[in-house]
Length: 292
Image (cartoon, rainbow, N blue to C red; front, top):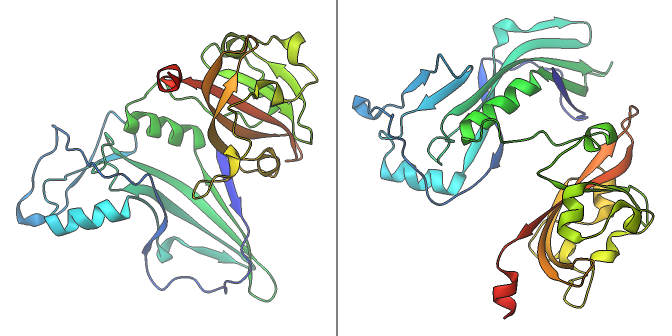
């Protein structure tokens, strides 16, 4: 099981008056929705949901009933994430409130997913003596949710869990080019795997104790991690717990330039302190053609 905890400080201790479904965030906007061949239209313009017996807790949605005005609204809104709670299931004792919840996606099938994702869990909220919300724990099956995401995206067996500890990051991986650095400036390299050596030409002995500046060259953009309109990708921000990615021109040990899509993830210890950073590099095609 996985636990997600957040801390909020300005809500009053008042349960909702009725069952509710509230949006959490908008993710994965796209402009080209897809229709699946196994969808069945329902009369009356009603949305139809059906449980899948073989796919676990997933729901598929009928898209034929969506009108043109609804379609326009969906294109602007993107995939939604919702949770549902019921007042009848709430237990309130002293300064602790507990209740089950159901978290699910909405409009994912409209945007090309094979199924919606649904995950039940338990919510535990703690309040202060002045009725202020101190923290919320949402406990759910994290592994099961990841498996649902794989099935919904059509990548079952291919998607991998992002390591969050040094031990996980050091586990063998033939498909990902991984380099691990310390989480403090100058972010020195402590480990590289064979896949990273194949891409860059640098071995563990070549780069241990050096920084990732060994990949820089004439066409490397030093401001690639802080481009206007794009999320920030600096090692300092990753060391503060924020995952990030960016694209830049890098050079291997022989001076060959390549387009590098680099994702950086914080690695924590048992005290939840960021001690290292995992960088996963992927060489993108087409740089030599554009350069020519």
